[in-house]
Image (cartoon, rainbow, N blue to C red; front, top):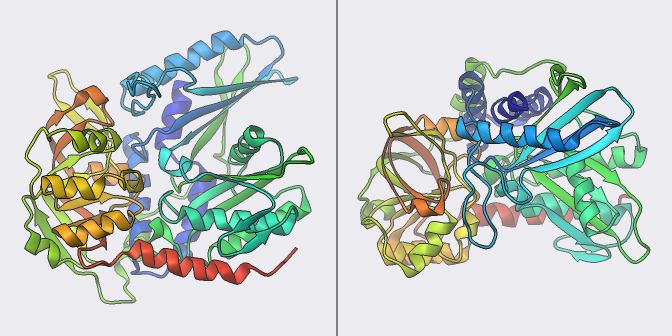
Length: 506
C-alpha cells in the first residue's frame, strides 16, 4: 500500500500522460496555454525523477478495494492507515485531514472518514486496489443538477439525453480554470443525491481511452469531449484549444420523482493508479493503468512548445518586495512577473485570521502566495519545501480585497483568478493578481531557495504562514489595477460559445 500511495502521488498513469500529450499537439505554440502546458510537462518529469508529489494538494485519498470472500478487511484497513501515515511522514503526502469543527489538522492524514476506503467482495482469488487522489481545487468544481432545470447559456434541460448533454457541457463551462484545466470529468446519471455523485467519481477509475459499452453514452462522451474543446477556456483558464481531456459517463436507475446528473471534475494532475495483489502474502502482482506507451515529454518537445511564438512575446517584469504602488500600476494583463526575494504563504485560515487580527510580520508592499506546501523538517530542525504549487484563489474572495488594503499587500499569487470584489480592490489600492500554474508543485518548489521562518503553525502545515525566499518565480498577470481581468474575459467568451449548443442533438 505504501508503494501504491507513493507511485500515485509522484507518477502520472500512462493513459493520462497520453491525453496531455495529445493536448500539446492541438495547442497553438507560443500562447499562454502552450506555455502553461510546457510548465505542466516539466513538472511531471521533475516529480517522476525525484519521486516527489506532482501536486502539493494530497486531496482526498479514496481506495477502492476488491477482495476474495473471507479476506480480513479490518486488518487491511489498518495496513492502509499505516501506509498513509508513513507516506505523510516521508513527505510524499501533505497533512490534509482537518477536523471540520475545530479546524485542527491531524498531521498524518488519518481522521474521522479519512482516508476513504470502500471494500467490495468478489469471487477471484486476488486483491484489486485502486487509489485516486483528488485535490480540493477540482473537488470544489464538482456539480450536481436536478432535472428538469434551466441551464445558464443553454436554456431548459429536460429529463432526457439532451438535458443530460446540457448539464455536462455546463459543468465544464462553470469550472473555468479553477479546477486546473485541462481536466477530466466523470458523470453519474440517476440514483439518489449520494449514489449519483458516487457513480460520477467511479467513472474516473475508467481508462481515459476506453469505449463505453452503452452506444448512446459512448456517443455522448465523444460529443462532449469535442464540443467542450471549442469553448476556448483552455489550460488554466487562459484561453486555448485544450479544455477537456476525458469524459466518462455512467447511468443507474432512479426514483420516478428524481433525476440527478452529477459531475466529478478532476484536474490535469489526474493521480489514479492501481495494483493487483497476491491474496496470500499481499505482494504486488501487476500495476494497473500502466499499459501502453509511457510518454516522458522530452525536453526538446517541451522547449518547442514554449519557444515558438505566434504573437509578440509577453513583457517580463522583475518584482522584489517591498513593491511600490507605482510598480504595480505599470503592470498589465498578459505581463509575466518574475518574483525574487521574499514571499509569504496564506490560505483560508490565514485570511480568516487576518480579518480580525494583526499580521505576525509587516506585510506592506509584500507578496502573498495562495499555497499550502508540503514541508519536511531535517535532523537539524530546518524546514525544506517538497512541493509548493498554488491553491484555488476564489475561496479567498470574501477576504482578499479588504486584507490587501488593511495591510498594504501589493501582489497576490494563486490559480483560477478571483472575482469582482478583489478586482475592484486592485484598482482602488494598487494591487495585482498573478496566476501561477496549478498542480506544478515541483516546478515552483525548485524556485524556492530557502525557508526564512513560519508563523501561525497552530493552523497546521498547509495553513501556516511560511516565509519563503524565492528566485525566478514566474506567474502571469491575469488581473491588473486598471480593471482588466483575463478570467472575466474568458468566462464571457466561453459562455457565448456554450450558447451555440442550445439546439437539440438527441
